[in-house]
Amino acid sequence: MKLKRKSFIIINLTLLISFILFFILTENFGKKYYFYKENSELNKIENSIKNGNNYNLPPDILVGNIPILKDNFEFNNQLKLSLFQKDSWKYNFWFGNDALKKLDETGTITMNFQQRNLKSSFLIRVFKKQNNFIVLCLPLSAIEENLKLMKTFSLYIFFIISIFIWSVYTYYFRKIAKYISNIELSLDKISKKDFLEIEPINSNDEFGNISKKLVTVSEELKEYFEFLNKKYESQKYFYNSLAHELKTPITVISGYTYYIKDILQKEDQKYCDLIINECIGISQLAKKFQLLAENFKNLEISEFYLDELVKTSIDKFQLDFSEKNIYVEFFSNPIKIVGDYNLIKVSIDNLISNSLKFTKNIIRISLYSNDNTIVFSIYNNGTNIPLDKISKIWEPFFFIEKNHKIDNWGFGLSIVADVVKRHNGNYKVENKDNGVEFKIILPNILK
Image 1 (cartoon, one colour):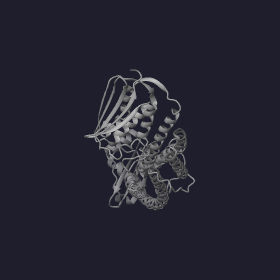
Image 2: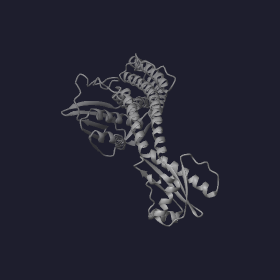
Image 3: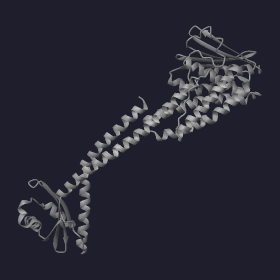
C-alpha cells in the first residue's frame, strides 16, 4: 500500500476513533466529573458555614436547618420541610438507619436522590453544626443542562479542530510521501546504474539535503563507473577515490534518514528502512574498495591459521544461513598460512556470500593442503553457470542475472581474483552434476 493512501486511511481512522472515544468518555465520565466538582463546591460551603465565614451561595443551592433528631421518620420529614416547606410532599427523600448512623459517626453525609415523578434528581449534603443539622440541596437538573451544553460545545470544537488537523496532517504526509517516493525512485535508478534522470527535491529541509546528496552520489558514481570501464588498470586510484567520495555523502544520507524515521509513524518507517538498507549496501561496497586501496601498495604479510579465519567467516553468515534454511558443512584440519589476513578474509567472505545468493539449500566448504598448495573449496547446489559465461564471472561488472541488486555490483569475484593473484595463487570455478564449486589455490610457503 502506498504511503499516501495509508496516511489518508490512518488520519481518518484516528479522527473516527477520537470521535467515538470522545462520546464514550463524555457519556461515562461527564456526570462523574460534574459530581466531583459539585461535591467539591459543597465541601467549600460546608467548611465556610462551620467556620462562620461569609460565603456567597450559588442561586440554585437550597439551604435548610433542622434540629438533631434521633427518630428516623421525624428526621426525614423535617429535612423536606426545611427545604421545600408546603411542597415537601412532592419529593421522595429518605435517609435510612445506616445513613443516619454514618451521619452520627462522621458528622456529614452526601446522598443523591432520583425523583422520577419530577424527572430530576438532587444532591443532598447533611452535616452537623453545634446542635443542628445543616442541609444543602443541589438540583442536578442544572448539571444535566450544563453537561448537555458542554457536549454540544465540545462537539463543535472537536469538528473544527479535526478539520484543521486533517488538513495539516494530510498536506504534511502527502508531502513526505512524495519526497520519499522521489528518493526511493532515485535509489532504485542508482542501484540499476541509471544515473541520467535523478530529479532533486526543491525543499530546504532534510529531504532536500538527502536529494542533493543523492544527485551528488549519482553523478560521482556515474563518473567513476565510466572511469573504471575505461581505466581498470588504474585500480589503485579508482579504489581509493571511490571509497573516499562515497563515504561522506552516504553517511550524511543515512544520518538524515534515521532522523526522518524517528518523526514518522511506525507503519511508515519501512520506507526509511528501505533507504537505510540501500545506503548500507553502498557503504559496504565502499569499505571493500577502501580495504583494497589501503593494502594495494604492500601486502601486510603475517602467519595465521586459515581454518580459524574460515570459521570466523562462516559464523558471520550464520544468521543468513538460518533464515534461508541452508545446511552448511565445513571440513578442515588446522592449516597455517602466510599472507595478508584482511585481504584473504575479504576473499573468503565474498565466496561464501556468492554461494549464499545462488545455493538452493546446501553449502559445503573444505580446506586442505599438500606439499605445494593450500586449497579452499566451496560448493553450492545452485544452478550451473552457462558455459559461455563461466570464464567471465571473475570480471568486474559482470552479472549472470540481469536483475542484480544494490549489494551485488559485480565486484565480489573480481576482488577474489585480484587478491589471489597478488598472493601468487590461482582460482577456478567448475560446474558439478548438482551445483557449482569455486576454488582458490594459494602457495604453501610453510610446507
